[in-house]
Image (cartoon, rainbow, N blue to C red; front, side, top):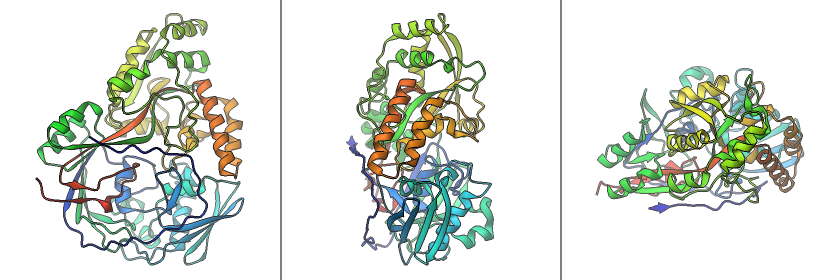
Length: 508
């Protein structure tokens, strides 16, 4: 197995320079990729963030910044940036860039994109939340944008890694719904053909990220077994999100397996706001954390490739606190806490989970459910397709006060991004977990302009969320991909995949 494990450290960058890519090859070859799901909005990046959409968007779209291997923002469509005042940033744009429809990428396109996310239709979406502190964006010249925030926001360059820039004229002419099937960006590929379970991309040789492949086909294969079978049969070249359990099967079949730390913590969300929820009591929240043998999950299900979770942030996120230890496995203590809280016999729990979204997710949740049953919590797991789970998450209508939840630090690789889903601040979207005592700490992080002090404050928040047991923290996720032998230079360090760097030779 080829394991790509990156040790990511906390860092912050204000002004960074980058050179234009030197390679200018004629695109050749094809790649077929099996993914577990397509984002419901397809090529429209203005509804959700993260995966599965990011696998496609990283092929066709670009943002001003990208999260680099150290967790800090690095140049993409912006070459450099400065915080000229506590609430004003200046971004200098990459020259000579065009969208796939021929429109010029410039400061006006950046302003247009930010204005879309700030309008009434989008500001309450996950993508809109990335510019929640922005009060204005203005083009001071064709290649310079100034962005003003309502309060100091040291994380703005990292947040903009999730804001993909779209061409203003095309957006106005074809509208948002049609844009979802066009995704006219500045990336190395562009849409060629789209079906419900198939998206075909062709090379965009004019892109600043010069593609090596002529064509990429994405196939939606929700079941892991289907992705593995397709890879071993030669029907696909790359299987995104396979599990440690299938590693030996893939290796025996001649495929490679690549693993890398995911910006995600696998948890059970614990609602304090659902009527009659037992998780309003901190003792119950702590009890379920003591009840689950997380290390057994790491070793027996994830092949020892990761660690037990201790907080909402994953180890690859800026603001992660490495001094916080996971709750130890102690079922006796868990039972005692339940009894103190008035639940000596436990209680029933219906748990909605998304399956085939995270490597080994169904097995991980199943193992945790068995441990919860040992302390008297009678669990009924309800497995949902990813799209159905996302709909419940958006509407706040899970079947019970505990539910499967991946806490993602994408797109800004920041501990606070993971936290947004489980705080009072999720309003006006449905609030699941609200611990009012944590909110002043979160506000202090948001108001801190100094990157180093902000990291220290984030670690205080992580400590408090651990002590309050805001979720049932299970394991830090790890991503696995199965790779055909003919695929070269697939080396992901995050879920933004540099498809332009990949090539594919003849089948051995």
